[in-house]
Image (tube, rainbow, N blue to C red; front, side, top):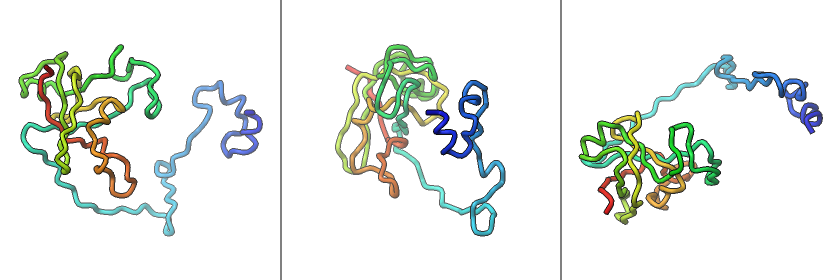
Length: 175
């Protein structure tokens, strides 16, 4: 199969030899090589307005992310060696300052409630706080576990993908 791939795909010549050599395959990068694939062969820059991303007092920006052993929504393991998590995916990563400011503590269980323009209450219950060096005002957790917080009416303008990197949430201690 590799011989067939080597004959068909550019850059894969010698596939069987290169597969065992660290760095054996080169994935090109046109920008790094300063090869601009534009009409004038020059880079094009655009200016975009910076959006106002403020939130009401008490709310944080939640982003969802994948763990190490996850491919899209398929979860293969409850561990995440990227972030040192073992045996649990019901966690939220928070900056130590945000934890302290809210009178919470690492390891504490909290409920997260999202706030979207449709006014509908969406809550994810019993997520453990993990102190993590994330930007103050932001937090992160795994999807699909936190998908319940996202409004189906909140999506990106062009791609129409769900708003999973800017979910406005508030926290309360779990009962």
